[in-house]
Image (cartoon, rainbow, N blue to C red; front, side, top):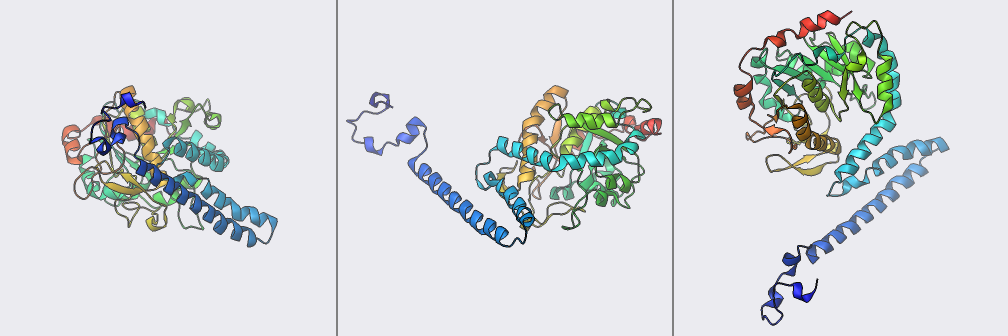
Length: 409
């Protein structure tokens, strides 16, 4: 900056009281110093982590193979080192999360698909519902803690709006005699016997499912299929960047399929089941679509879900601060933050591309909008959404099971 660029003259006696950082819009010197101090603290922390974690892992190993086994989880944790920063790089987060998921799990998914192929070939694909629910309202039931404010209202919606449960919310609905029209399960992970966690079969074992059509990804954990005692449809992930998905879809195809080619039963890749349920509802023609229980954060630090067979211990998670839709600071974790980032980026465009109205009717204890999805999902009180969109019976909903029966071998 040159002297003649300034908006004051140097013969002004008040010149030294002028804050020039406000003139040029640059950062204040104190802010720069603070950032440098934080960077130095971060470097020291990483060095300490390396010393405290790596050395014992090497010293405690009895064989060369144990060294590798001990170091693997530590390097995986360090690979997420960007997560300790207060300013999260969304692009890096999504890229790293997708890369880690594919590298660790794709081979296992392919093995699960091989076990599922005979079942998939004898069941219809999700294409049988494409555009069959044109302009029928839909509620996607996520399992966040805020679901407690809306779950009891779902029963009155039967036949007036499509009720799309997720695996994590299915049992909560059934125990209250709320019969979802669909339930989507996209998580291909099986139970983690060591940790005592894992959804899959736990979500559906001994739960009444005769009147709910399951929507399963084709590489889902085989035990999940076995645990579900109800009608099942399958789909595959359509992602041109990952050719193995199309290969897995071809393995499920066959000339004797009563519903035609399985390649028509696709859903675009989703970061979580909350995303794939939305993509399925849009393909079915549903409009408008809203969520309940979509928190993607921990408004109640004591629990990760409203009710779940896969509850997580929040106190053991590495948490970060984020801003809620209601303007208040919330805690979330890496996975939830990445899911919200996907929503924030894709939901506005999906609305335009598909001419569909998307909402989030999740509510906090004080009645304010819940969650951390700021773009694309318009906040609307659930009672208001019901009154505006879901007061009249829709005959298309009654045809869901009938359509399934036409194509089941």
